[in-house]
Structures are given as C-alpha cells and as structure tokens.
Figure 1 (cartoon, rainbow, N blue to C red):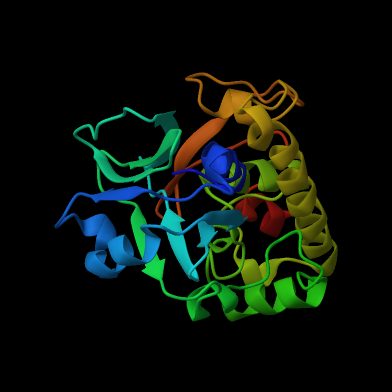
Figure 2: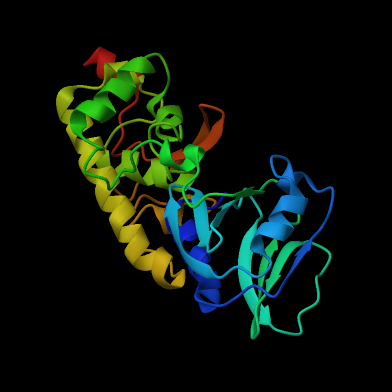
Length: 271
C-alpha cells in the first residue's frame, strides 16, 4: 500500500490540471471506491469547476475545487493517479476521469481497495479532524508517548502502522524506523524507555522527511545504506551488521528486522 512519500508522488500527477476548468466528468457507476459518495453530486459539483490545488495528509489526498468543493482520494493497495491526453477514453479500471481542455485526470484502481470522496466544501470535517502528521509541530514527544501508552500491550510494529497515531507510515517505513532505532518490532509499546521513544520520534521524522525528498520527488529508491532495498530480498543482509535479515509476521504484517541490531525481548529480559 502506498505510504506517505508514494502518496505525495502520486498527488503531483494531477498538477497539470491546477487552474484548469473541468469540462466533463466520467464516473464508473456502482464501484465500491465511491462507497461514501453520492456520484450524482460529484459529477454536478465538479463539472465546470476549477482545480485550485491539492495536499496530502499521511495516506490521504485532498483536491480542492472552485464551487467550492473537494475530492478526497485514498489509493488503497493498487490505486494510482495519472494525467493523460485530452482524447483519453476510460479503460477497464479507470473509475474517475476529469477532462480539462488539454488533459484527462485519471483515478485507476484494479482491485478497488481505494476510495474517492466528494465533499461540497473545501475543508470537510473528516479532513480537519485527522491526527497530527509526524512532521507537524504538534507531533511532540508527549503526543507520541501518550499514543504509545494507550496501546501499551500492542507490538510497536503494529502501533507504528496505526494511522491514528502515525499517519502515512506503512510497512516498509515502520521496519526502517525500528531498524534505525535498534528496537525489535515485537517489543510492546508500553515497554519502551524514554530514550527509545525519543529515538523513535526523531528517526520517524527523519525517515519521513528524507522519503519525501527522494521517493516523493521522482519515485527513486533510497540509497543502499537504508534497510529499504534489502528488506525485499530473499536472503537479504543487514547493511550495517552484515547479518542475515529475518522476515516474520508481527502484528499481522510481514516484518523485516536485523538480529544484529534489534535484540529480541527475550534477550533483553535475560540480560
């Protein structure tokens, strides 16, 4: 599933439409991506409106239109945004197409895990009430620690994936953060010492910022010094300790960690 930086990369695909009027709208009726949207209101609200701009929040996107109106987009596992020529005709998995005078702005989702929400206001309530992002000033150590304490009996890997506390963090980012912090993914959130919490916050902010500056710009992979390029490989090797990486299911998700950097909770108890 696209994470913070991948979502930012996809958001910019519709930038050619900014300032342009939407001449016509195609909606593939009856698809679950519109499960919380009145598609008739969507077509009426966007036809003739101008795309004013867009922003991301974690894994969510919001496109603002004149009128006023807003389009919320969640890519899910297989969703994508693209800009196509004016003569583009909807393909099998194109569920929303917005035509301007020069372009077609397309939302495509083969497996229908994404979502499109039309709102008749520029900043809908659900957008205004999203939790602080990791790079926001409000994402303080106290804010993060309170969230960890409310989920004290959950593995820290699962907590990092909880969008209510760590918007935009997905599977690979959670693994990267814990690997850099030297914390085993199965550690219970409530067991983390203050120094470990400080490290998680600092590293999470660094990983988010650096991912936005690399993947978010042109979709290039982070350097080989990251866990990222090695965690996908069978027989992957930790780039710091040169110890073979381990992959197992923790918190319901496939997790990659390095025994050379991230001691298991059992080892910590023995020492």
